[in-house]
Image (tube, rainbow, N blue to C red; front, side):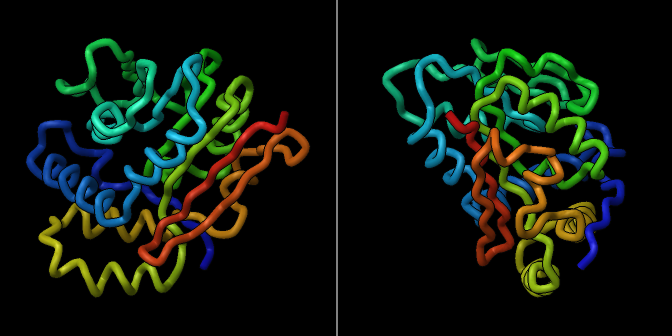
Amino acid sequence: MIRTVEPEILDTLAEDDPDALHNRRDITKFNTLMGNFRWFRQKLNSRISSGDHILEIGAGGGELGSFLDKNLHQSFPLNIDGLDLWTRPVDWPHDWGWTQADLTTYDNYSPYSIVMANMILHQFKESDLKCLGQKISHNARLILASEPARSAAGIFLFRACSPFLGINWVTKNDALLSIKAGFKGQELPQLLGLKQDEWKWTCRTGLLGQYRMVAARRD
């Protein structure tokens, strides 16, 4: 299946549009079913240190950050900033930063040693991913990404299950576009332009259509 990137309906809706709010609830539901938040907690739990400054790009409604704030138990305070076109969520931890900006034009990635991306990178074409990769990989030591896996099986599974999930029309449209824009094999680190002599990565897919990348800078 050739990767295709098309605009999603959610990007055309206001933050307080009822369909946008329903879509955000649907996305949270999918994150729970796919275990995405738990996956980030597991990977961070074994790799984070007290000096790390973390950035979540495409942080949306702040659900992942809020989950980590409550469930990632460390002996030191978490330091996570959010970056998104949406405004700062009301329940985003008050001592964490938030920047409302386009992640492709944002240029202040240098303070962050860990960058997280959850269900966001598939929205961008190859040229944008390459530019973004150059920015976030300059100083980061760890990049974690959970994205849709691109496959005909994933499309079939979504179409078979969607009538039972209570999702709205925006989700039905955007989810299919997300799968078609997703990744397979070693595509994501390659599209981000990560160099094998500088980075070591693993990319795995799950039975529920997850595509997960862990990229760590070589010592």
